[in-house]
Figure 1 (spheres, rainbow, N blue to C red):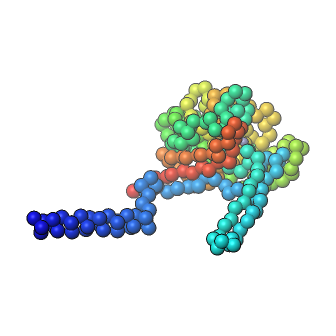
Figure 2 (cartoon, rainbow, N blue to C red; figure 1 turned 30 degrees about the vertical axis):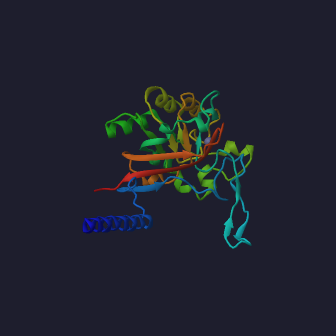
Figure 3 (cartoon, rainbow, N blue to C red; figure 1 turned 60 degrees about the vertical axis):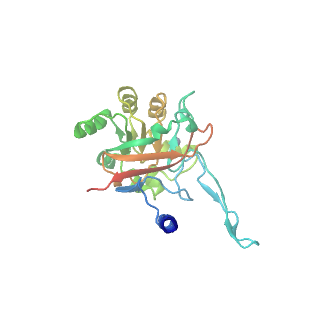
Length: 276
Ligand SMILES: [Zn+2]
């Protein structure tokens, strides 16, 4: 009996020590089951002094606070920031252009996570900075991929994203203030195409690599209105759309949850399956 007891004790000890070692190993090397076999593409521009905001807005401001070793011996740094809801990579909540529609904190998470697809109109946009994406462009994607635009996050690749570092090229003007708005030139989604998506398809959300879902020369922002009437949120100034395939990847787009906000800074990523 005594020997058996000792054996059991030793066995328990071995299991215990083994599990402690195992736990330590796991702590030092976190295993990533969610992202295994996936390439993550960050679709977010950084928020800093160069971040592009609408001409009527001040840019992003990081107000430096303390940074250094405290008198208690530990290091501490903390800053403050300020900026408009709509600037850099951000989401437009439906209430941005439609009364009594969802505020940013009320957008269902299900609309912000899901399969992404890319409609590539970069050739047409290279010819015409004021190009507006048509129903035909969207239908062409459907024909090529043999499926309808249903339950997907639609990302519009205009090619404008590659001009992000040059404000004048990206917006069509480097001018600021209310007068600059009339000088904006960049592609967008045609209002009839926005209406078609909202009424004849069932998309979760839409995003674009320009400063607005409506093209730069828009005066009535009708694509905003047509989408937001149906509570379809829009992502603007989306980065790195040139690094995505045209379907079969996942998007996670989580904005800052500003209570009652009309939009907000957005961290958006794509997870693209690695080829076997
Ligand atoms: Zn916006």
